[in-house]
Image (tube, rainbow, N blue to C red; front, top):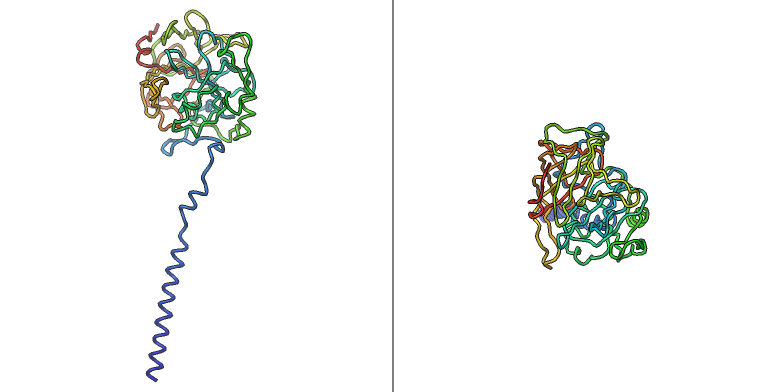
Length: 352
C-alpha cells in the first residue's frame, strides 16, 4: 500500500512539473517577433507618396484664408540654367518657389518648384548635390540633365524621384533651335507628371507640410521700408525692385528685366528671402556642399518692407520653415524667391 501511495505521489509531481514547463514555453512563443515585423514593412523609395515631417515637428496650423504652398500635387523641381545665354527661362512666371544658388565659377542655377499642369519648362541643366535636401523636402520630381554620379553619395539619394535627361526619361527632353547647347534643353510639365505617375502617385491625399501662403496680401507689423534689394554673385549685379501698385517685386539682371520666355510678361515676386549659409567644397574640389540641417537668420522682403526672420530645417527631408517674431511665417501671394548667399555674395548686399 505504501508503495502504491508513493507511486501516485511521484506521478502527480511529474504531471505538475510538465504543466509548468509547457506553460513557460507557450508564454515565450506568444511574444511577437519584432525583427520579422520590422523587415516585412520595408518600403521601396519609389513607393513613397509624401515624405513625413520628423516626429518632433508640430502639425501646421493653417491661418484663416491661407493654404499650404503645395496642396494638390507633388511639385516638379527643375534645375534651371541661369546664365545670360539661357535667359529668359520658360515657365518661370508660373513657379511657386525658387532657390537661387551658386554652382561653379560663381555662376548660379535656379531650383524652380512648380505644379502647373502643362507648359514648356527650361532650359534644364545638370544636378548638384547641394540642392537635394531642398528637393526631397517636398518629395518633388527632380528634373535635371545628368551628373547623377555626383549626387549618388547624398544621404537622401534614395528619396529622390528622378526625371533625368540621361536616364529613363531621356526621350521626354528636346532641344530648341533658337539657342545653342547646352542652353536649349526643354521639357513639358505634362510629360514630367506622366512619367512620375508611373512610379508613384503625384496627386496628394493631403497637403505637403512646409511653407504656407495667403490668398490675399497682408502686411506684417513692423519692418523697415526697402524698395530695392541689390546683390552680386558675379557680374552683373542683380536686384529686386518693388512695385507698390502691384505689391510685387520685379527681378533684374543688371538693367535687364526678367520675363517669362513664353508669355513675355515680367516675373512677379511676392516674397524675397536672403539667406547667408556657409559654402564648402565636396571632396572632388569642384561642387559646392551645404549643410542644411540646422537654423539661422535671414532677411525677408514683402510689401516693400524688410523683416528679420529665422529659418530652420530639422532633417534632410524636413521642410524649411521661417518664423517672424517667434511665429511661423505665412507668405504673401506670388512667387517666393530665396537667394542663398555665400560669404562673398553676402558682402555685396545693398538696400535702398
